[in-house]
Length: 156
Image 1 (cartoon, rainbow, N blue to C red):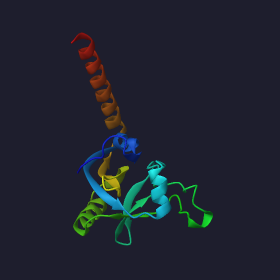
Image 2 (image 1 turned 135 degrees about the vertical axis):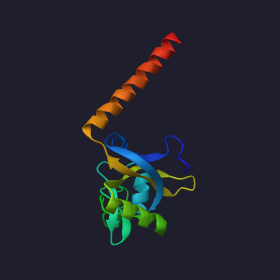
Image 3 (image 1 turned 180 degrees about the horizontal axis):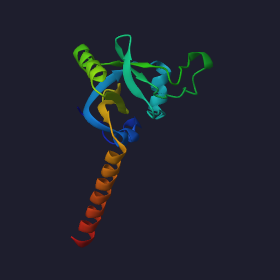
């Protein structure tokens, strides 16, 4: 999957990589109304506490906060936290929903961005939860990598 160049992300869920092991990434389209697209283009969105799941046999994004577009009138705006349908191929959808039902996994949105054609996409991660000891180990490893790079830069 082609990742957008740095700076094209509308929203990122930085906490997801801390709280979950990401086993697999996939790109999904998202069904939006006009004011949501305008709000995303203004760079205003939050993926904190959001997740993807099943509703009526389809894949939806829940709790993603896209604030109302201020320039639109009262009557033409959208709900900020409404469920948004995700667009994936049927086989992929069935595989993801099956793995969510069977295993202890969840679908976590990692980022929302616009692809080179200007279409809004969601980067989803098939994730397993981390325990507290796993989080501590990851922090220790990250700190060691940073210290090692600093030592090599100063003395190498």
